Image (cartoon, rainbow, N blue to C red; front, side, top):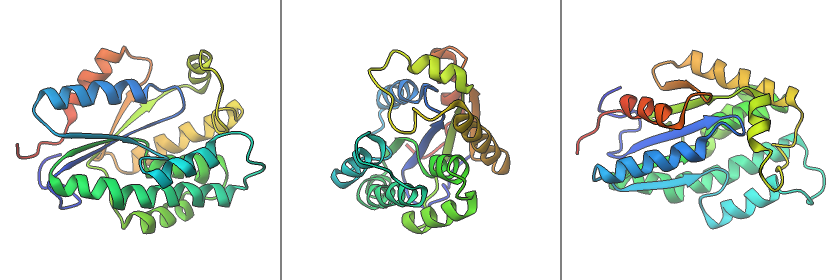
Length: 214
């Protein structure tokens, strides 16, 4: 993948995707540090969240204690958070020429709500494309994790959020959806096994970064 980038902006947009416990946060930290050492200005962010309103929506949709949240409401809350995130944070950063490293993006909604909640991939994709004005990452890194392994990795956390706490069958459908998305657009995806060592995964990501003018 080489310049020019698909969104036509001077920055670089990298999304990290995968099931819960895949190691996205670890790889985001390693990647941001490497990019900063290379002299890049990096914006590290996450979804849902990334803006004041997005963080409030994150709490509503992920934390326990807010009552029942039906699947469509859940999908729309994620899309609303993403709309604010893209227009208030990501696009301004890309316009400045920064590198954006984002923990989750549209593919997570397609996987979790489209497949996991049975709303349909295309319906969820359409809503999110509208919310983001069609903004796509230059590179999506998919860390593929077995659901049982992901749950084992999460066992040391204080508590699981609403989606993490879903049964393994839910997480299995999500894994399949992520892999289907990668197969449909292989030029934009780097699929790596989350079972690899963090350093090996990091080196594989660095090798695949799109080249942009310094």
